[in-house]
Length: 318
Image (cartoon, rainbow, N blue to C red; front, side, top):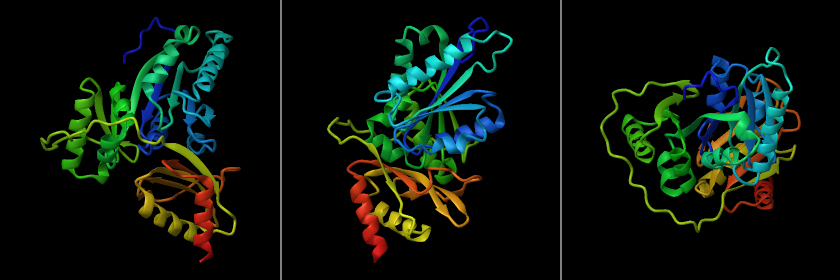
């Protein structure tokens, strides 16, 4: 969206996308490239144990972490309070002292951007101090078929977008990418569509002409997707944990839509990420993640922390 030169309100970019779509990876590259110069970053995680702020800290000029509730529902009050605090700080500064006029909100993968937009517009304070400049939604091309055919939220996120970024496009065939793009266009004909691979821009050209995927009607009777966390005991090494996780994903990967956390190894802390049954190569973090090590968050249906702990303990004893 083109900003109004006479509009002095803070400009807010809402960054959305389903679990595992690559929001943090994309945002890291945008900050490094200077797309959001000096922006204050708000990071929302549904789980009580955050991870994404660790990854963004090096690039972000300033940052606020909102953990333990989704910003569109259970964490909405915290989001409103954080935005009001930023507006209050800016209003106390003179025009010469003010820095950036941008905020980027990286939402939880379980958030509906339209609900966040409505919450801001319905707030008597924020509506006068914040203008939502753009809703950017990332779509995981590798898992889009399964998500769009089974998760109503993934469709709602796309429908709310001003701009859509297809991610992981280097991991799918041109035929699949074209079908995903056609489906996205069907859900949101007005949105601008771009692509990225590992956070970097990727050209969308010479794709075959293929139809969109058939999307079934979805009922509201499914169990909710919720986060749960386990602390990995110090006597469990990376090799044993990775074998256990692979077995868990093979057995129940369809119900486990996201895994992320930091695992301490002799080489340093490793960032662990998985989307459904696909485990991403671990990334060695540049600095120790204090108080986050060996805390792994599982986001899915029907998972309990104690069940996961017992499973891991049983597996590593044998």
